Image (cartoon, rainbow, N blue to C red; front, side):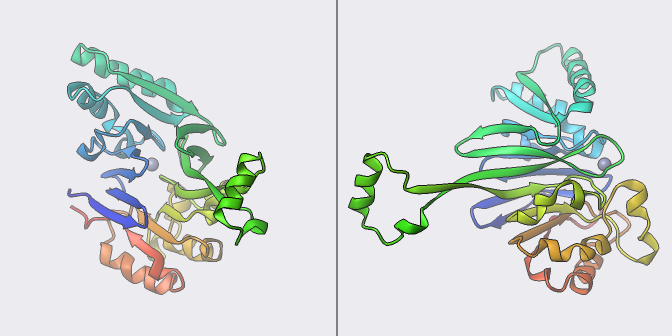
Length: 278
Ligand SMILES: [Zn+2]
């Protein structure tokens, strides 16, 4: 399957997702990965990989990526995962090392909701709880932004430099949710992760469509388009919403029609990273 690249302002999002087949994304900057798919060549260069959960359409590729990185001499990698699966992931990767008779340069980092990984350059990733059938996390990509203090707007540059040199604080700092990635989740995520509505870019799954699939989401820990429609008021501040993880039983064109029908107010901001089913 050929991965697409979506450009949203400064961000480039590469990857694709189909339920049960494969889910992986590479976010540039800062050059991190969300989920590993079955082993996506587009993720080999990623030093920081954030795994949402252990279902193999998301996680199978972890040892392959580490193996490729060793082969290509790319240096250490960090694999961040839900705390509850860290031991099993360690065993999975260790078994691959024994199979290959090598050791990968890697660190497995266990996170709980609210836990953070610092990426440097004013960026961090914070985990949040999602609503899936096995231990799973979503991740916020946070960016620290500095803006001139309101009362100093219009003050000449030389004067600002003088005040700064004198030790005066001339900027306010705030942390914005630059992007949020939900992985697999049911509608409980809207309660467990209230900051989703602050995300400039929201990557969220939409697995099911149509009246006959309406109850599937609650059973399997996935979202139905009507779950998104019922929360659309919360998503009004998002500049872009990237839908992924459509079930193989639905065509991409069905989702396009469903977005126009159920999410008319958001449709212009919605992007699909969903290839046609194989
Ligand atoms: Zn899953």
